[in-house]
Image (cartoon, rainbow, N blue to C red; front, side, top):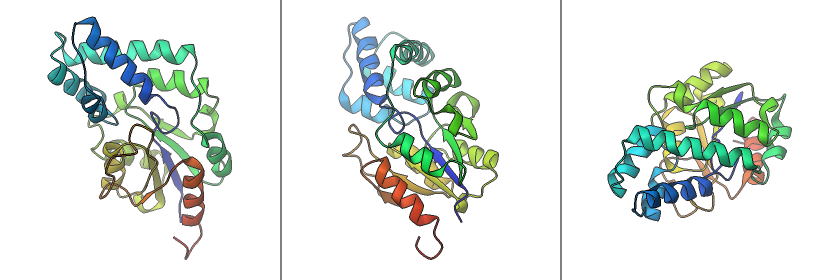
Length: 220
């Protein structure tokens, strides 16, 4: 029986990954550097400080990882406040399972960005709990954030479904023991999710069909 459906945020619920790439390029330019697409891609879905360490190491910007992290988050907050849109199918899947399944968010983003983003797209009331990246010790691909969210929702790993758009996040859900559905974004559609997910779909509409199937005994 599926009791919990847990969503990543960036790239899955909101097309923020393009914004993060723009911000990364801007920070690099501010210091006379360039950042490759490969670096930006490998930063996706990871714990916020670990992501910033990759950026510093591979661009050579004269900043600490902590400084990059705070700069990125301040710039992202500005963009969230300017207006963002939900990914196609988000409201539909939330409406379909709200009241039937516990709904949670497990995101590497800090609480301040979550509290700006979810109300901005009008979906905050759907969720029973939220776990943000600055509220855990070990970030994705470590399973801590998903295990914590499952505990808050009162669901066991084998009663939980995780939706993720990036391999690092999908691996975190898999290591937590959940059934993981990969929903790649435009920026991660060429990534290898094998070993990190149980199923792969094209969008949240297809993900909803999979979750519905998993909820039906004998059809999982």
